[in-house]
Image (cartoon, rainbow, N blue to C red; front, side, top):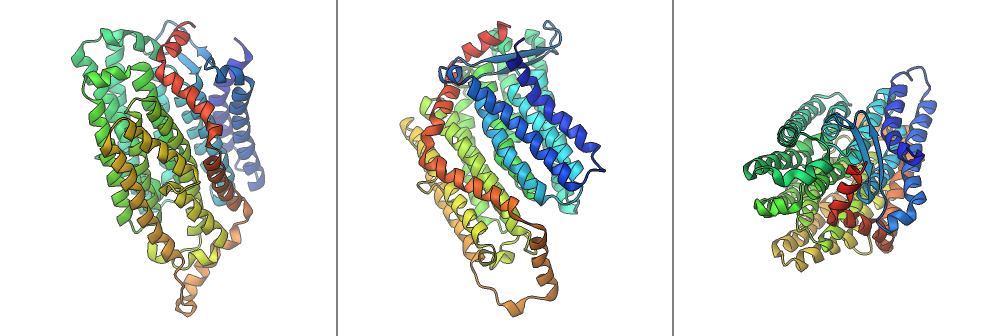
Length: 511
């Protein structure tokens, strides 16, 4: 086994070790704990980047593949990790965003940091595991682990609202997991294997009614996890209740991981043709488009800043899922580009809003009055990122939305093209509503002493680390907008994996 392949197990094990370490770090001072957290996630990011750089030629030629097997090969419960260009691409963008979110967290979280970081790193381990695993049983365990470890992070601030949001999140997360488990058990009883590559080879041998049942339960599981209409209502509550870095993790990062799992299941393991044959692809595509439209409409009505951002995520995720289901090269390009763009933009929006909301009485739109004057630079960054999500040139959000729109037009799917355009127009209205409130002047004599003290509280604890992370996200959104061609090679090689699943299947089964 080459050293390279051991890096796959390290990507999953290292965050677990840091999480265990954090549990026992109660006697550490805050500075040491923060240093370990940033170092840990820094090593994780360095590992993924080294895989990309050291195998650059193989990645470029779509020949990149690594595998690590743990346990007895002939049993169904073997841990089988595999990395191709698709998983490398997702691991790279996800770990980069998490690195910045951890740096932001070191300053934002000022109480129970050891519990916070222990849970955060367990979520990171589960995310890496979900991206790297090549068998269904391990994938199921990692998906459940994500749900279990993010639940206490949602209720981290221990109020009645956050506890209710966390319980609802846990209920729907577990329900999605149950549906996934049913499909997994049905596959095992029909084929006697849980290795994705082996399932891919033999899926056609299963009877059509059983194929339909398996696919429907997988779709239900992922529709719940992605917050697609009509099972979307838990998402805004959960994503808005938690601390800003966790909102960024859930909306910015975690939804992309579930999109990756969707691709892995319905392109690599169960050939997309089965979705077409069973008349499910068009149904899910249109459902995702309706979900996208509903997400934007609800964002328009939301008077809570974080809820508005969470509803906006429903709008974007629906659009990405819909474009992927067109199953064309143009659609994959637009979809993967918008996944990258949305990951940066939504993480940046939740972090900047978290910073701004430190000095307000509540998240309500009326309490944001004047906030644009008190935090000029951070609010300017917030506006730039908002413009990116609307799709303003020359930002990355414009480029990715443009390619998504082109994919719908090329496929002659005019409802899809309409949803992309309508979503952008609605987004412009709801973002302008919040921006105009933030620039309203406030009569200084109208504030009570309690309000004055509350508004000052956030300024004493914050220094430049949080601001720096917000500015980095903003700069990346501008740079990748102007130079999106940088992403072309990694995206095209990831598309190659989606269009040629037999390569992955052959290499996994080859040992």
